[in-house]
Amino acid sequence: MEPFQRYIESQTRRHFFRNGAMGLGTAALSYLMGRDKASAAGVTNYFSSPHQRANVGLPGLPHFAPKAKRAIYLFMSGAPSQMDMYDYKPKMHDLFDTDLPESVRQGQRLTTMTSGQSRFPIAPSMFKFQKYENNENGAWVSELLPYTASIVKDLAIIKSVYTEAINHDPAITYMMTGHQLPGRPSLGAWLNYGLGSESDDLPAFVVLNATWTGRKDAQALYNRLWGSAFLPSKHQGVMLRSSGDPVLFLSNPDGVSPQLRRRMLDSLNRLNQEQFDEVGDPETQARISQYEMAFRMQTSAPELTDISKEPKHVLDLYGPDVQKPGTFAYNCLLARRMAERGVRFSQIFHRGWDQHFNLPGDLPNQCRDIDQG
Image (cartoon, rainbow, N blue to C red; front, side):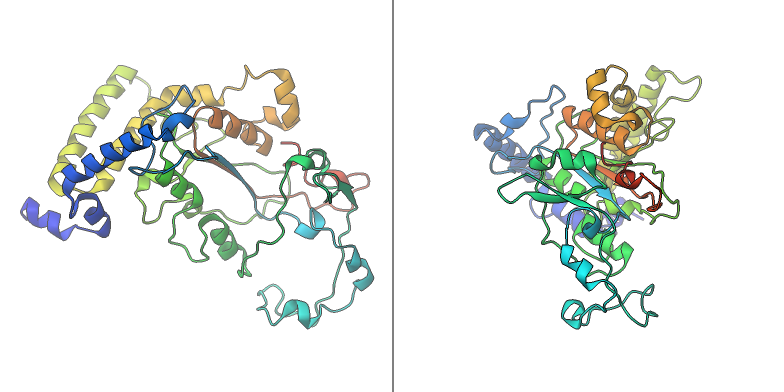
């Protein structure tokens, strides 16, 4: 098949926007004009990191200096109910073992787990609550979160958000992408797409999956939860591992020097560039950039994960688990270190909670995996 015919038959909407009506020259010109316009408006002044870069995301965007430079998203799947943590409902004690009124349920669908129940009795929280001052009204926090309660004055607790999903996976997908059905970009991918990266040496979007001490039959996590869907794949999250290389195949194999690795990548990039010149698939350019990022991460990733130089008073803030790679506390510290190094979006998943609610004197520690970290 002729190269041009292959090119025509392989076109997608992504190709159209990448190579289509305006052409490569116009697209490049618009990028440069947008970048210069943003710079003239002071948009890029928020790049204070020594690891800064010129890539600020979409051409000409953002139109204004963003108030938020980066985000750390902590997602604790399978957590205790909000009524056991922040949403204090003392009147439920008066309704104990009475049936849930229809005015509350309002005909909502039942999950498979509860569809066989003959009744739906009300049960109050079994944990004690205390009011802590964080504004003129104060905030109620349960005994499960003693460390969080001590900083509640610095938190904004929002109780008005909800989803219509009744099962775990659609609900988690909704929380990560804004839609119950798979196929949409994740929040981190959108932020990466819109704002670009501050760092040449680390990905703009990093994912950490924390270990846990509770029951092991936790809800599964799928890489679509940090995927880019229909956005270019370079915007998807990069999962860091807690043992071995932070990213698979980051270290050079035995007998392969950094110089040899560099020569190999240069040759591979030339082949990929020839493929791009022939077919025009933008994913080829994404592959080149990912190979280059992996090469730079050979230096940046070990430095990032080495917490030996963190002061003791800082480590003490995160609790004893901070010294154990892969724990929630350790990952929280890494997220802070990544933010300092220009990572736009860090996402930490935690999937297990200690369920032994009846252990004497142990009630305040049920959320111990995540509370202090």
